[in-house]
Length: 156
Image 1 (cartoon, helix red, strand yellow):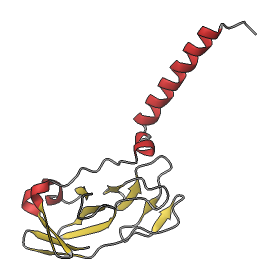
Image 2 (spheres, rainbow, N blue to C red; image 1 turned 90 degrees about the vertical axis):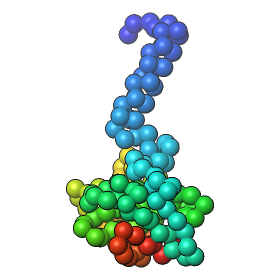
Image 3 (cartoon, rainbow, N blue to C red; image 1 turned 180 degrees about the horizontal axis):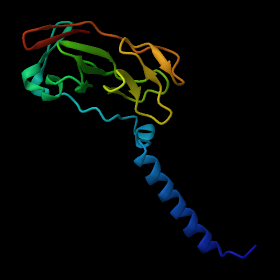
Image 4 (cartoon, rainbow, N blue to C red; image 1 turned 90 degrees about the horizontal axis):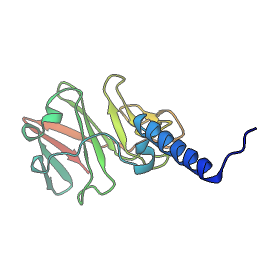
């Protein structure tokens, strides 16, 4: 085994850490550390709170105007956060934003019709919040919603 100098060892180790970190982040691993998913925040002008309801003007939030789109709300009205997914024509699913395993945000996977933790090892949930796989033991909280015209009303 060849002799290696301390300086060379430290340089090689630092390079390995940088490469590994870059690879993990490239594979969606950054969410594991930041706890933030890829779902965009709702446009503030699209959201109003009235009593125990959040009213969303769908004409002001383009991501929710198309089936497959999703947004998150995490503000003073809903500090724990919710995710809203436009799952079918005139159908929206709303659930708590944080995975029940480690509190990492969930994203909407339209192709597979489910919510998925943004962390490595992804716990997954049905659209009604039930666990499909992963380390999460509790379901996501579901929220009731209705659509009237261009307004989505969510009871919080």
